[in-house]
Length: 500
Image (tube, rainbow, N blue to C red; front, side):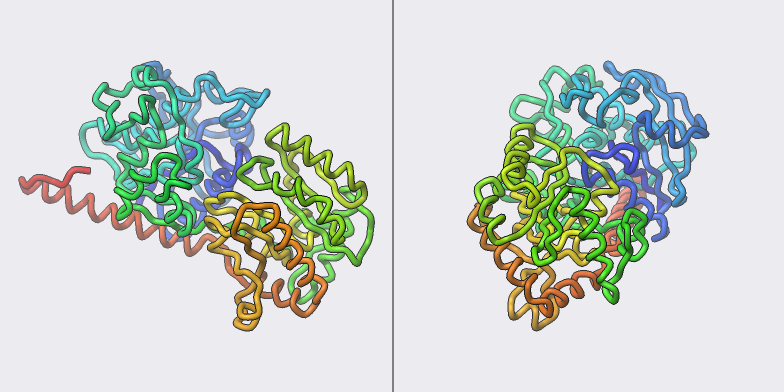
């Protein structure tokens, strides 16, 4: 079975969130599961530097509209997965992230940059591909790849089946209607049953409408996005396509995130030797300039500082947290106003609270290992990865009951402690009061060492590897491949094949 995995991000070279890590880990797991998978990703400068011997496999002509010529380079990762690097220097070799310039603003030509990525994914999934290798399934990830199923829809000849994965429905790739022509799409594509969305053009809408199957990154999120509260304008479309929609819980890279082997930690540990956590906690306090009070629990958070992540809830209860007493460290970057407010909160409690603006992968590992309790009060969270890292590192998380957080964290209660499922703390309403009440419960449990060790054991015993998710995706690919072969046979025999 051959699968082309199209993505705008690939960790560790270019990532803005969980998608980059997923794009690295899931294809490797699929390869282990027997899938011939290849990753199509823009040839960003860090990727070209990481793979200087990538070989040219195709020169690609201008892709229509305002989409320029490009090249396709091939390389192989240490895990054995083949990379197809879309080389277009004017589009992808720039300062900044995958989507934003060095000043944090959207690139003005993102519609063309990711239109080229989508058009190339469609080309490689059609009989017009310049490569001998042809996929059975094209797996598109988030809005930057969402136009690929639309391009395929308007291509003739044999083509791959398509899967559209939603990693965060809040990001939709919406552009003015007049971008249709530069993208090289036919006029008939701009319709309600097409790429049109309230008079504009949406990459996400294109993927959700034209893909054969839709997946998202947790079972709970698959249900939530069919509601108006979480559907971001697409709830009706997703309810209409619910039979083709599946929620598959992400995994984590259990080699990279393993406290027993983690190269980023001053002392490695496992459940049988949890004293190593104390060494990491001391190192974390020293790194953030906190006092060394061993009788106080340490709360940690690593995330984008945005309204979605719920960190603004801390602003109203910060003084109450300090009085518990508890310490707090926060690592992240995001909204400038929220960054300033959280930094001011930390300044009011020197030696007890600390905020470090930016991102440091090694320090993120230390926060997971050294904190006693991990905070994830997200208003919505399609899957979340940090709660799984935290559980693996013996750091029970506090989460809001949403998306993948609800699928992975079991609230601590007498019943769940008794049946061995408790592994963290869950609250419902996204309010400062609800968060504070849950932090108080967690701090109280931390002072009861027998309860705390049960929580740590339960979390550290869980398997969050990629094997289950890879098997679920493989089943989806297989079903699509069988359906396509049946449709092709019926067509050859002279009977009309089902559309789509």
